[in-house]
Image 1 (tube, rainbow, N blue to C red):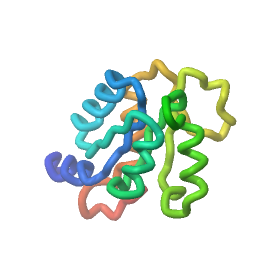
Image 2: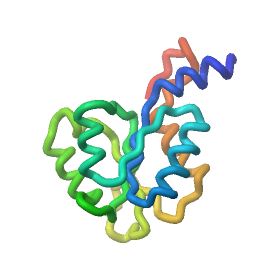
Image 3: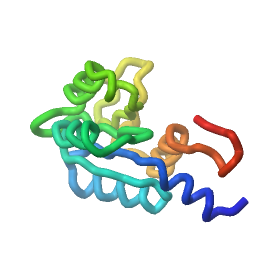
Length: 135
């Protein structure tokens, strides 16, 4: 397998990281970029919705809950009300996992970076070129 081709294929997949903690957002974006993904970051739900409406078409949205201006729950509710935005999968990132329904996809803070990258790969990986594998 040509690793460069696989990385190129993966780099076509975009992840939107919505996190108000600038240092954490930067660390997540850097790790995803190093893993070969195209990454966009937003500091709150309002900025993220603007990206989704005009620029971004992510394979996954990593969404913090506690943020200024527009929190993660409000952003998610607005996404669900808009047919163009409701199709994007969301993975919540929170220090308060007890606030989630059992069927909700989330990663508790603090999180293991390898676990995060593994979950992102589940949503964003198309398989090796010409394999016909798609998730």
